[in-house]
Amino acid sequence: MKHTNIRVVITGASSGIGAATAIAFARQGARLVLAARGKEGLEDTARRCRAAGGEAETAVVDVTDAGAVARFARVAHDHLEEIDLWFSDVGIGVVGKYHEVPLDDHRRVVETNLLSHMHDAHAVLPIFRRQGRGIWVNMISAGGFIASPYAAAYSASKFGLRGFSEALRGELRDQPDIHVCDVYPTFVDTPGFEHAGNYTGAKLSYPPGVLDPEKVADAVVKLATQPRATTVIGAPASMLKLGELASPATTSLMGRFLDTWSRRADRTDNTTGSMYKPPREASGIRSHGLRPEPNGHAKLAVGAALLAAVVGVGLARRRS
Image 1 (tube, one colour):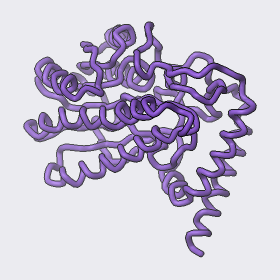
Image 2 (spheres, rainbow, N blue to C red; image 1 turned 90 degrees about the vertical axis):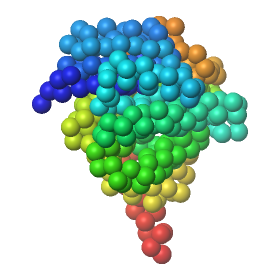
Image 3 (cartoon, rainbow, N blue to C red; image 1 turned 120 degrees about the horizontal axis):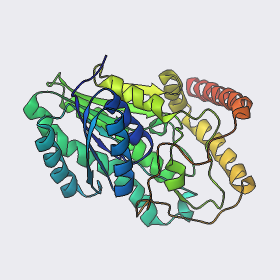
Image 4 (cartoon, helix red, strand yellow; image 1 turned 135 degrees about the horizontal axis):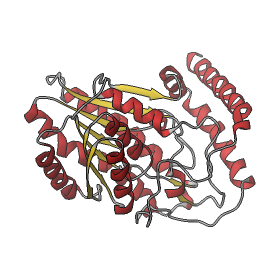
C-alpha cells in the first residue's frame, strides 16, 4: 500500500537508517522534511529521495539544541501543513572502558541519544495534540534491553529512551490516535562505527549477522499505517526480554569477550569520530568496509548459543 502524500519529518537523516528510511518513504510518494547536522549528507539524502519519487526539503539542525528543534518543528509544520509521522533517528556512540573515556564524550552521547529525542518529542507532541493524531517513532536499539560493556553512556541513553517512551504512552492514554512507537534493531550496517568515538585502541567492525538498513527502514514505513508500541528487528522480542532478565551474566560474558577483542583486533588511534562535528562529506547509508565476511555465520551461531546459555543460567539463578 502506497503512503502517497504522507507528511514525514526525520531527524538524523544524513546517513544510515535515517537516510534509508527517507528514501523508503520517498518511494511511497511521501513529502519529507529532513534534518541533521551535516549539510552534505542531507543534500545527498534529499537528492536520492527526489530520484525515488518523493518531495524532500532539508534543514541543518543540531538537535541537542532544544530551541533549534522547536524552531525546526514550526518550519516543518508550516511547510507540510500537518505532520503525520516524526522519526527521531539521531544517535552516536563512544566505545571504551568507562573510566578511560573523557567525561565530556559520555555527556555528548547522552545529550545526543537521549536529550535530542526528548527535544523532538517536546516539539512535535503539541502539534499532534492540536491535530488530534500523529505518530512519533523513537529509534532506540537492542541496547535498550541489554547493557553493553565498553559503551556505558550509550547503554544509559538507550535504557533512558525506553523509559521515556513508556512514560509518554502513559500520558497519552486519552489520545488513541497519537502513537509512540519504539524501534529496537540489533546491529545495523551503517556508518555508525565510523562516526563513533573510540578509546579501545582497536579497530571497530560489525559482528556477523548485521542487518541491512533497508530492513529497518521498511519496518518504520510500516508503522505509518500499523503503529505499534514495540518493534524488534533482528531478534525475537522474547529473546531481548529474557536477555534483560539474565543481564548480570550476559554483560559479564560480553565484558570478557570485549576485553579479548580489544587486545587482539587491529590497532588504531583514539578518536572522537564525528561526535562534535559532522562528516565533511556525505557518509551514505552503509559502512565502508566494516561489514564482516559471509563466512562469519558460524561465529554468529556460536554467539547465539552462548547467549541462550547465558539466558538460561540467569533465569535459573533468578528462580533459585
